[in-house]
Amino acid sequence: MMEQGTAPNRAQATAGFSTPADMPVPDRLNLFLSLAVFAVAIGLIWLASLVRSWPAVVGVGIAFSYLLLTNYALLHEAAHGNLQSNPRRNYWLGFLTGCLFPIPFSMIRITHQCHHLYNRTDSEMFDLYYPHDNRVIKYLRWYGILLGLFWPLIPLGAVLFSISPQPLRERIFGKPQSTSYMFSNVERAAVWGVRLELLAIITLFIALHWALNLQWTHTLILYAFFSINWSTRQYVGHAFSKRDIIDGAWNLRHNRLMTWVLLHGEYDKTHHRRPDVSWFYIPRLTPPDDERPSYFRQYWRQWLGPRPNTELAPVASPAEPAMARQ
Image (tube, rainbow, N blue to C red; front, side, top):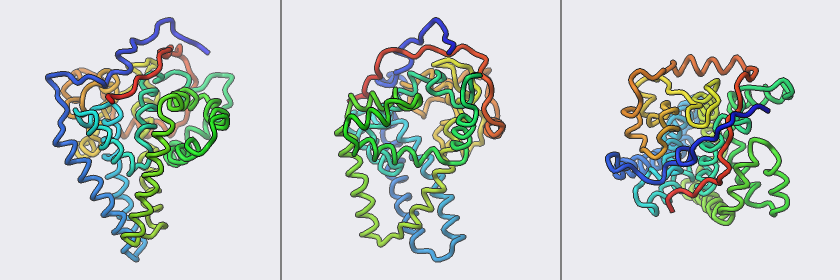
């Protein structure tokens, strides 16, 4: 394992807990978007249960998958405390957007902060490999992400994490390199919060399916489309970028429609530099001369597979991630 000698500034890596005075959180816009996305998503799930034509279900599934990309962007804002300026409102909107994903908000809030601390370290090096790495496992993991198999592991992991006794949780989640640093912090932070939120999510879906007479198979089809759409995008902003905690990401160039669907999520490097800033202001903080590769070209580059690592690994901050604004 190769490591650099300098660690990133922890304040940079975990920023997101004090909003700049000249860039206030757009509370009303975020509230409207969160409620509108939730309502339309439930409407699409209901519509999918009504239609009898499989091509129509596929069409609804595609629309649903893109709508939930916006939902995830809002959930991501909440994880940084940037969805609402009021901490309590931020939590409840984060919980609401987490219900659609579905994932307990308390879990993603911690794990995503860990991502900012461990970005491009060996724990998150899915796109590169060392000579001693098992090449088969590397390729299977990488193409599993691109084929949409990443998303199902998240709700499944939340369930296993919630129902497992502590010794079993430590055995399951404490060993894999890619999960130990994340779930160990969730363990210390909010196990019961995760459990209660997960129970609320399950109750919500059961109530919706009973009240609206929904078809479980159709709902699963919609989430299958979202799984593919979301999973394939999760590493596009980091793949083959420099191995640096802060600058190990890309600002990509996308079309105008998708930049709004993603809420400027293609500006990943700027976000890692300024996670304290709302999505609304990210483009204006990106230098005009900053390199911005094509989103589509970067996406297709991923399908060429993992590459040999040629850089020193950055050193993650030893400090635990702080909770988002409580």
